[in-house]
Image (cartoon, rainbow, N blue to C red; front, side, top):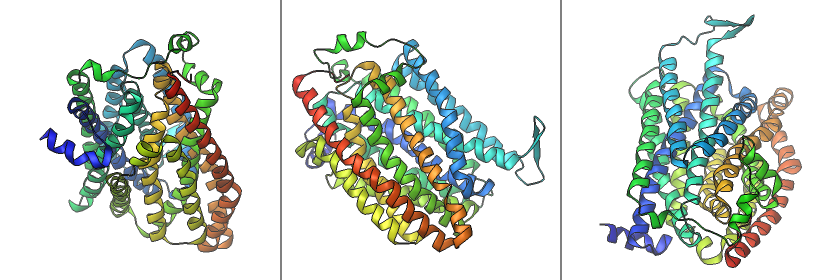
Length: 463
């Protein structure tokens, strides 16, 4: 069976040794459950927040989630000094699994009507609003921490040549979870005639537990020789420069141009997508509500992963394997420039559905595996600590930046009308934010491609 699967994937991802292939199958299983739970939580987050709070308050929620993320990252950095990488994963995933069960109970039994209010420090707060914001922060921090921690472990257990083919294969397997989870689980409450999304959330808690189970199997079943990572001649020297502490990951990030450049190529597409996302959510919440909105957003989430999987099965990973990492990185700002032109020009929920799905899909299928390879010629602490800050803080911080821009959408629509206001906001965001960022992204990608190639050729750590 394994030999048959190897023959199937060889033209798409490259030639694997038998044990190497099994290793990436195990990692793909872990990632599939992570992505399945996350992409089910994403439409849940949007549907619950739009229903309980309102889509126009999404930028405020994005800002608030960033402040919650900072202490979590500080605790995570310290945990990496105390526990092994896999134990840290089990602890953090376990906490999120328990929180998912708590939110399941709250969503099922706590009244969310306007008459149900809580009094906190003299302030009267609607229970629906409080639950909407709390759940939003829960999903945002989960999406920041768990995938980033998984890829930190992947980069710390994979050689450069193996990563060229294996990382794209992991992402492809992950998309299977991203297709099944949001489409079937997110639509389940509506199909069963339930009034809340509690059942879908409980299933997410189960999938979080399964990701922990399969990661344990990965570490116990994979031969130690296949858990070795890249080692440079100057590795010990670089490691001696790094001191343990709460802010070590952040200090590493701001002290190296290479890591700041990775931060930029993570953040820039997220900023652009955040603007796309706000326009999409606003239009979607105007046409759908309740469990119907959840099902629509779940269909969108599945579409993202179907398109990403299609890209991967068509061999998009071969761009990196054949032409080099630099070409993959440079292609992304060019593709996003085309998406931005479409965003400015057309006003349609159907078009935004396709634009968002294809933009996110190409980011996951091509840009994602390429960025993860950039961490390989770095030290152990950079892979596990700085990467967490880059992937988590970079992603959410960029959404905060996009959220600030999105604050202008509501007043523009109020002043000019829904259609003209959206068109005006899209034009301003495109010309004054997106295109300048795309220009910078292009040259940063060139720098990263050259630096990575030089480090691998010279067998030296970048930092």
